Length: 122
Image (tube, rainbow, N blue to C red; front, side):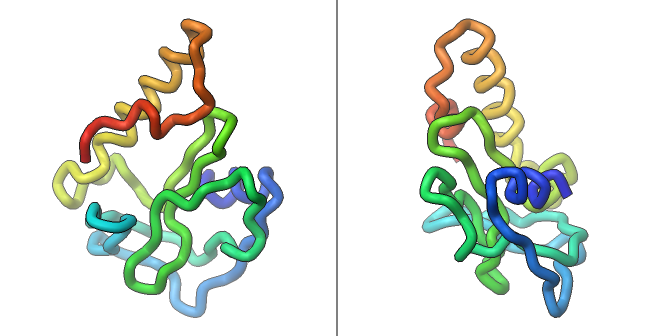
């Protein structure tokens, strides 16, 4: 739900999925990196409603809905799944590393606004 709220707060719209994403085997990713995720939601962010400063970082590979986004200039990012569930078994650990790196960078006053700049190898 935090992913949807962040999207709404950034001006995006959400819509109800015909069939929600439920279960421990939802593939998400972009290009050559795929994560097996745990999901339990019935709404998605509309890609057509995203502002120019928002980048899609993950897609649900079953239906191509937005599963992750980040703001290009603010230190904000989110995913529409449970990274702590680790069904892959540790496919999403890099998200926690990225979050901690973003907090440390912001605390030291060197925030680039790009959380992906702190991404570990995935």
